[in-house]
Length: 264
Ligand code: HEM
Image 1: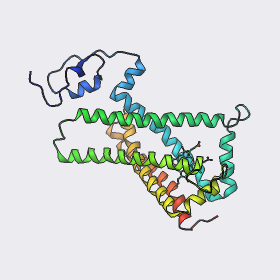
Image 2 (image 1 turned 30 degrees about the vertical axis):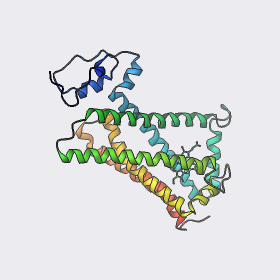
Image 3 (image 1 turned 45 degrees about the vertical axis):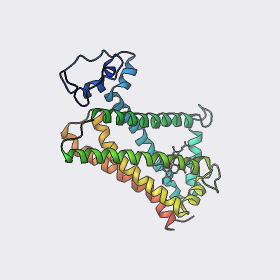
Image 4 (image 1 turned 45 degrees about the horizontal axis):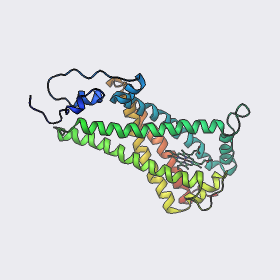
């Protein structure tokens, strides 16, 4: 049999090769797939469907977080007492059943895992897609549409990850904020957003976050199997509404402070 472009090599058909990968790359007659081995969880993670589930579920956790974080930080407009009390409340969550900051650290643990698996699954799915499509799209329209969405997600994702590192250095740990005072988010935020380059960085990153959520929260439903066209309109409303809410909420803080519309 002649070897077609994109056909798996003999090595890739060995037991242990990614079953989904072999399936999508085979352009010839059907061949028996290697029997998947290992624990259910490992097999699930290794499949493309499993990675999409992991992306969607970790994405839902991150969506909850960005919404809750936005509601909390918007208290900056209510004054220093309100936002500083809120930050202190976060640290005392679960008391007296749990010692101070234990519940907060539990939530941070879930958040770190969600970020980690979201990024890992995105990276591995991109690699699977590249290997699965060595033959380019036949229609330039399909190519443009698929490429725009995936390129936008990749770049907005990278911007958000870089922003997060800067944001933690600026608001949580302090080295990027020369007036940083632990336990005083109100002054820390004002000092940050009164500097024009920092305010611009926050605005750009949160616009990227809005785009990311707009496409991601639509794709999330499809990854979870909710792809009946009957629900398309509702999914579109949800994705657009959530993205606009998050973008307006987050961008309002640096924008109103840097322009002087809100001051201390
Ligand atoms: C204008 C936008 C934002 C503002 C004003 C803001 C504000 C803050 C503040 C004041 C803190 C420190 C809280 C404290 O330690 O008491 C913080 C921490 C944090 N922010 Fe933001 N944030 C913004 C956007 C974001 C975005 C878009 C993300 C995620 C993509 C994010 C993720 C985090 C994380 C993970 C922490 C650390 C939380 C912790 O220590 O438990 N923030 N933010």
